[in-house]
Length: 347
Image 1 (cartoon, one colour):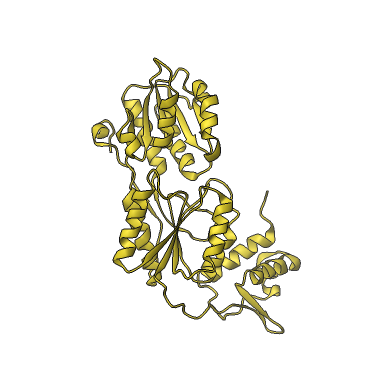
Image 2: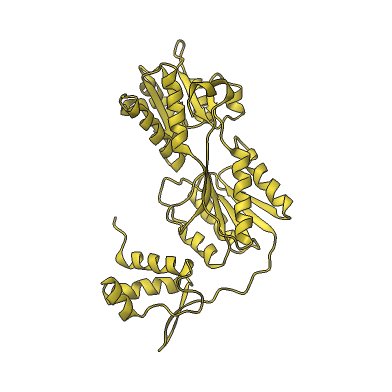
């Protein structure tokens, strides 16, 4: 569905306020001015202004106009940083959290850990609770970042309170000017597929996660490598799964996806392990995966090494920089080939 006109206007005004075009205490353009500038109806303009007022961003003064609400008094720092990830104690998350905690500890900050279980409802509950807690900022791993997020309104409330957010692994495009630290997943998907192509494979299956942006970008790189090699991107050889249905879908669809394939690119090491567990006798495609976790180091497949601890450390440093008044920007970190196969892929 197309975004309503009043929402578009509200988004533009909100971005102007957050970008400093209209600082705290300054009057916004009048209804007449906005009607003349945008060509929207007076009713549309009123709806947009009412939305900004309901969010607490503006205040209407009778007979004078609508003003950007003055920010709250300078908050006393609590030296608490909320860290919200999908999981905490398993897979690659201890490495990421170690990177975050190391930087925070060096600067006198304490992380407050929460996990969403990759559920949007749990993310909303956690964010709502954090709005009432004494924190200076948030580091967030987005939940199902390939899907529209119903919790963007809460992130805007943090922004209005002057509480910065830095995203890791993925982010929400609907959040205004997000700062994030992610891996270069499109390039990673290409590297994984190119490695298998250089090893002589010509029919390569793809197994990707559908509900986060990492899966989509790894797929994009995989598909680009096939197209550049003048090979088809075969829908029948691609399996998309979501957080909740991986095991059931692998049981039902893996044999068909792997039919005729001599290799596979897997979304991550967990997916690669699930694939291996279902291989039948004599069925042994070569696998390239992502994360280079302990699962990969103990298994007969190759896995690209991700910047786990570095990613966490950089996100924490960016958040601290923002708290010190510095302007920060997103960062995209490279995947690295494991040493045993680095020679197979050109830079």
